[in-house]
Structures are given as structure tokens and as C-alpha cells.
Image 1 (tube, rainbow, N blue to C red):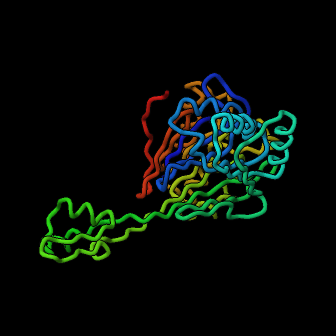
Image 2: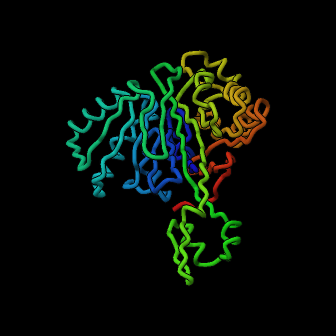
Image 3: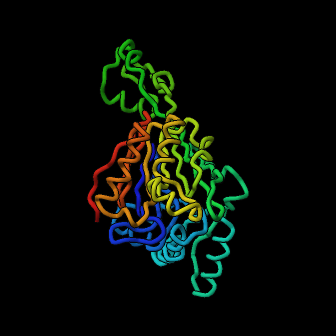
Amino acid sequence: MFTLTFLGTCAGAPTKNRNVTALAVQTCLNRDWWLVDCGEATQHRLQHVALKVHDLAGICITHVHGDHSYGLPGLLASAAITGRKRPLILIAPLAVKAWLEATMLHTELFLPFSLIHVDVAAVRNVHQEPGLSIERHALSHRTPSVGFRFAIESVKWKLDSAALRARGVEPGPIWGKLQEGQDVRLDDGGVLAAADFRLAQLERAALVIGGDNDTPALLAGACEDAQLLVHEATYTEAILQKVGPGPTHSSVRRVAQFATERGLPNLILTHFSARYDNPEGMAELEAEARQHYSGQLFLAHDFASYELDAGGAVRKIEHTLR
């Protein structure tokens, strides 16, 4: 139903191993994909994965901070250079729109495609199309920040094999045509109507992607019936206590406890402080998470991909980088 590819998983500034925040979201509906946040050098990360900027439907920016938005002008410029004509949706704060317009003016950046801005603060349902809805949910950070809930409804058609066999039709080419929705005329002159032998199965999936946020409980409503939460876990609880309330980020413990309280079956942590960018640091984060959460847990790294299926299960996808 969904495929997530992490293009950046570091908080604040990049390291040798991790870039700043960006997450690609693909759906089972079509070739389109969405980008949640666009830290500096996101366009470079895209060179290593099988995602085309011409298939990018829209960009969702959680808040104005540079590690979530500084890659935006460069990505748009590259899309223009490579001949994109298709309109692009930008779901972002008004301040991001104003900054982008100023950057375009002063660097003589011309876009040969329309940029359709949606003010992330103005409406809750920021995007709706057949089968897909995107909602924003307000969070707590030192600047206004939001999370996004992506929800899919997809109809999958299944043949009524028992009814076909009762009609004397065994598996073969006829089944294939009926599966595609084609009526079939038999040798004896009879007609098999596809509508009589296809059963509609409605499949649903929902995931929630948080922006920077020191209060995971603010996503309680967004996580209702969701199968996956992706949330920042910048520090362990001990370091968060030392850092103090100023950065307004979450600890691993707080996110893990929230996921447990909400009964979320899958949790992916991301947006890690650079202090953890080593095997010992990541082991420390994972140990704290597993102490408070017993569901399916992943700590994201750059270029990691995960698939959320119709059954609500998440698995990591192994792939070769370009």
C-alpha cells in the first residue's frame, strides 16, 4: 500500500553517514510519489534511488527550519532543468512560500511548471484525490510544526472461483479477461459478465509522519486506525533532560511509550542527533526504544526503504543503490 524511502535521517546538520530530513512516500495507486520535508542536498540523495522527479506529485514541508526545507529551491531548479512541465503541489507554511519566492526572484530561477501552494495552517485536509487523502495535524515545536497522515483506500478485485467452476469454467484465459473486467462470450453463445464473477475487496492503510515535536500525544487523533508511525527521536531521555526544553524535540522513550499506549503495531524512528551517528549510539537508541515498545520497530538510516502492506505489516526492502 505504501513504500517509504528515507533520504535523510539526521537532525539539524548532516554527518558523513546521514543527510538532513527528507522522506519519499509512494503509494500503490500509481507512479506518483510524495516528499515529506526537503533538507539540503535532497536532490543529491535522489540520484541514488529509483525515484524520478517527474513523478513527484507534491512536497509536504512540516515546518520552516532549514534542515527540513533548505533543499527545496535546488530540487525545483533541477526539475526545471530536466524539463518538468507537470504542476507540483507544495503543502507548506506561508513563510516557506515567501522564502521560496524571494529565492526565485533573487537567483533568477524560472519554473516552467505551476507550483500549487497549499497553506499547511489553513486547512486540515491538505490533499484529496481518488483513493488518497493527506491530513495535517498540529504539533509542538519552537516554531509551528505539523505531522501528516497519509491514508489509502484501494479496491482490489478478486474472481469468484467457486462460481466460475460451478458455471463449468476452469482456470485459463477466460479467467484473466474477467479479472480485467472484460465480459466474455463463450463458444456456446453464452456471455459471462465480469460483474457477476468479480468480488470487490476494499483495502485500507494509514500512516502518520511527524515533524519536529516534543509532545507525541498530539498525534493521538492522527494515529487512530493507523498501522505505522514515523516520528523523530532526536535524543535518549537522559540526554533530552540534559539538553533541556529549548530544542523542543522528543526522546526515544517518549515516542516509544506513546506508540505503546496507542497500540501502534509499527514504529519507525528517525531524525537522530549527530551524537548517535556510530554503532554504539544507535545501539543505545534501540535499547531505549525496545525497553518501552514491543511492536515492530525500525531505526531508519539513509536510503532505507520500508513497505506497509494491506495487512498492516511493515517490512524492510533490500535494494541496490545506484
